[in-house]
Image (cartoon, rainbow, N blue to C red):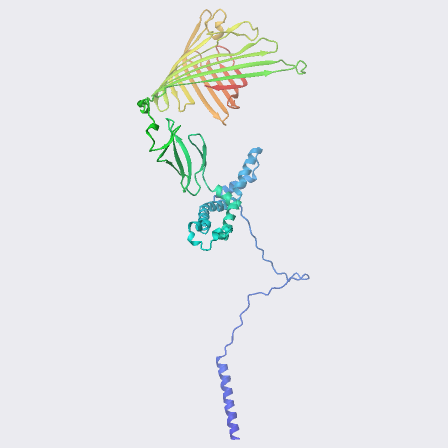
Length: 540
């Protein structure tokens, strides 16, 4: 009984010790709120349980392969704009499609990289071919001691070849893509070299390996010599090599040890002497000449039963120009000659003259400063044939030097370019001369009756400019103003000429010529004349 009590007491103490240890080391973990919400499925019968859906938006930006933002902005604008001309819209669309195609950039980068590796592929093919040749029939024939089994007598020559390498080479030779890339990767120009016999030899400068081409060359005497053209492996380089011991003439080909009877002997030793070189002298050309010739035609036909009426017409106009200019240091002398002659036939009337004017101008200038020149100028204009009154067709109103207008002036010429000239003359003399006083009324041109000429003095301004617009339109403008010191200020003489030449092709052009004149000696009103013609144009 005593033993039972002791055992019970020990068990009780051990149990209390275990509980005490568990209570001493136990910790209470706090419960934190969860931030993960449970996912609730959407029910068809309940809207309150709908779970919001997350949408991923992927926006594709165009033309990101173009680095310049201004170009991307321009492409967007061009796509929205509408142009009137179909050809222009089509051209813009073609270039825009090319610029917006991002695949071209990556494709060309790949092709460019592929081209750079073609040479490595060719070297790999050459290495494999060399390896096959070592294992081939030629290798065993060059080393008969290796053929102890007499395999060379067998008909199975392919047993000496490496079948795997042969299959790889066959694939490279038959692959169309590789062959196409190989041809395009040469990055060179196919050149043709002609030999002594005019036989052509086509050579690629970039083949990736050294190549030799045979050729024959010929000297001035007529002898030919053989040689070689070596294409360097690096490409775009060729080297010429001549034979050292073989020479060829028109009849013989022999070595340096040729017999004496085959030696060429010249009958005259002077034949091989170089002629004396003649050195020419270089001289500057001071005179320049050129001329323009224009022939224009006009025609109109109306049938006899044309309801609106009218008359047939035919017109022809010729415009001849000749220019001669002398330039030496600071001196310039410009001379021009121009003659316009035209005829018109309308209906049943006879052929009549509708244009007749001869103009001669000469201007001598000496450089003053910058674009200004001291200049003196002489002008003359008249007609060559009789001109009749439009009302009666019998009264002669003008003929050669009746009248003849002459002007001599002194002033400054501003010429910043060859096609622009502004002439300012404070001293200018003007004369009107009538040669034929019997046929021509001198009072018509402001000359007193019984006299042949009239003189005047004043100031003159003349402007000349020529321009080319739109590559097909040539504008020739000529304006002349003359103010007399003796006459009233309102008696200002103005002569303005404008020529528009529309170029059709190299020989043909359409021209519009307008001439406005205000001269109170001739008429109180402004005189105006205009012609429109199409014809041929030549420049010599």
